[in-house]
Image (tube, rainbow, N blue to C red; front, top):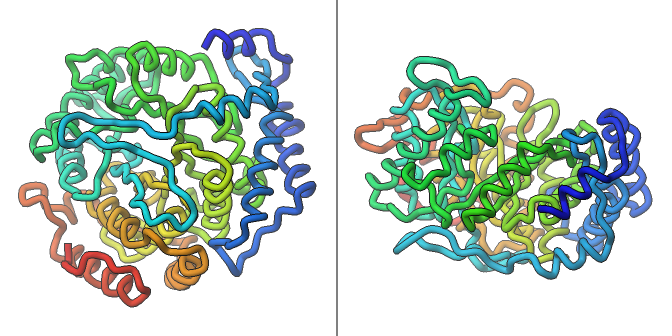
Length: 458
């Protein structure tokens, strides 16, 4: 961290606007052209090792050329090729999280790997309005057999007041979220299962500092996910979080969301940018694991044909050229209790798993509405991810194309579905009758596509 801070304080001065537009965006276009990287809409899961290697090399060169921008000092944190290669060599080849019988080891995967993906399941930071919602969701996540780790939702109110950033309300909300999430896992009999997003409620560094105190239930064996800013930017608040987590011996993760249609341009530039963000996390946050989730600027999801291609291309680039621990996080456009939502998440996890990554799942309905997520979507995602294990890229490509044909024409106006307690029975820990029928149809459909998911309705 001292080395990162020295670079942040002494690096080349530059305005944020110049970095984003004249530096980053221009270099992305230059690298895509230089390496001849081309998006193929007919193959959302490309099967081309040379493409994967070109995407990786372009991402590496992008980081070397533009560095990481520190908004707190308005300077560029630069790295040499030797520093990048040394960091890649020394990056962890596995991490062990959780305690007791829920303790597990997360290892990297390769393209077409028959090894089951690590499944980090939950709301992907989705917003909830009450403690009742948090308990219902986290207990539901902990009861998913395929769950290796949990991502907690974000409480938006405490004591009847809407949480304000970096305030006592946020600190109290984060503390409360930690206590309730651990209680929910206790109810499910999975006391040792790790949280890998720390706490979605703790957006600020001061809130995390409060909630990290051991009495609230967070542990060094949990994972502490810290977001970056797009494109390839960091600030002191995020570096404070990294420093705190390192001080307790916790696992540092970085999540990042390059926008397709944003500074990285189209699918090609988004794939390259996502690779560069992996390297940023390794060097600037000293990450143990990474969570990429490129989003389409228009749809604010990543189930479109273009974003699936970007996800698959970057996943293959990372899988072929590193042993980084990376989890592809998927966002759907449609909401809970809709077949489209389950089709979207299925397409995304199949593309990622066949391309060599594990998964975090799932941001439902673009995570825009409070209480519009249930334990069903991550459970279906994990079941499909396990069933897709061992698929080669060509097989995955054909399945993803068939799924796309069922929903891509509705991405502009997706169905929003129903809220948590409209389609989830928190007392009996099961979906509504309506949702069970939708799940059964989806599973029958997946069986027809060659994905052998569990046959029972739920």
